[in-house]
Amino acid sequence: MGGIDAGQPWLAPLLPDLRSALAAWQGGAPVAEALNARLAARGGQALAMAHGPLRFVPQADLPPGEAYEAFIHRTASVPTRDNAHDFFNGMVWLAQPALKRRLNELQAAEIQRAGIGAARGPQRDALTLFDENGALLQAPPELLAALRARDWSGLFFTHRARWAETRLHIVGHALLEKLANAARKPLTAHVLVGDPLTMTPTDWAAKPFAPLPVLGVPGWWLGNQDPAFYDDATVFRPPRYAVDR
Image 1: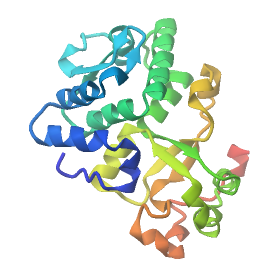
Image 2 (image 1 turned 120 degrees about the vertical axis):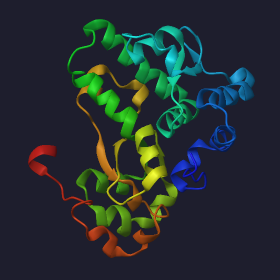
Image 3 (image 1 turned 90 degrees about the horizontal axis):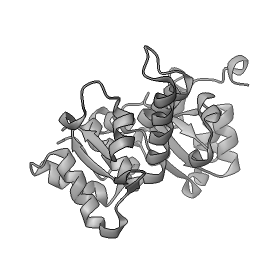
């Protein structure tokens, strides 16, 4: 917990909940307790689930053999361990409740339909990938076109000023954990440009994500002020037209 710097630009969409919950956790409260305190502070803005208001519970409350997502849907309770991974999961629940509720509903419906097997299947695989590593992007057309073309120079330099008109929200809690623990150049989000609340299971199964090396975002990393930062083809990879077109 000591490595989390609430002042980093990628954490701005999580404020002020982040500062309050982090202070409680650093003060000795379990993560679930720290997150529930933020829910209580919202009063009438408690997050409603299908089976009651959202709450965070210790991981031990998850019954043996019951799928995590199915348990959340059945009980409106999120099993939570005392680590950064689950802390950031809770923060995204607070910041993006409609999105997290939708992801959970789709996961639970697919689990009810197909059960739990050796593999998740394409829909649950896509939902899990986005939940762990996703980001939401609203941006001017020039930036969206450059992102789809993997025109990194155009995206991050030619149209650099347009990032002031852009909203990028990282919603993948595993990616947030990695950025907090050891931010490094190759960290890449699976970006969704459309509205996730209107996407069908078939839409999700197609994995309509674009890769975005997030530390290339202007203002997110000191080194990216130098155009040479984007010359690293192991991170800023050229388009694979035969696959992506």
